[in-house]
Length: 116
Image (cartoon, rainbow, N blue to C red; front, side, top):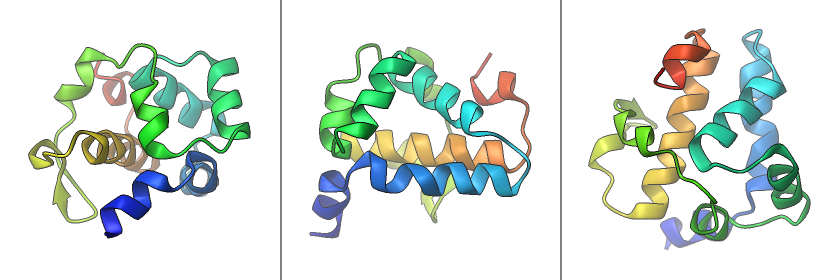
């Protein structure tokens, strides 16, 4: 049941927490947006529209125009869960995003975060 709640949570309700986490560590909202665009393929205008419409996570990832094939290179633990072991597709996408924001907040260079 808890998993279903996160799927129906709007990205817009969590997004400010991603930005705050990044900014507390000297990173920027623009970098958070770049990560999301890299992960999903949304253009900035499309991302802004998704946030404005309060799209839920399940829809947000299901409608992502060009999920980055390199996202499968994202490995490690976030929230006590090994990202690469998450089987449920939407939850795995959410964990990918969580992991990228964690890496940003930990000061990792953008090129490495974006698996460049």
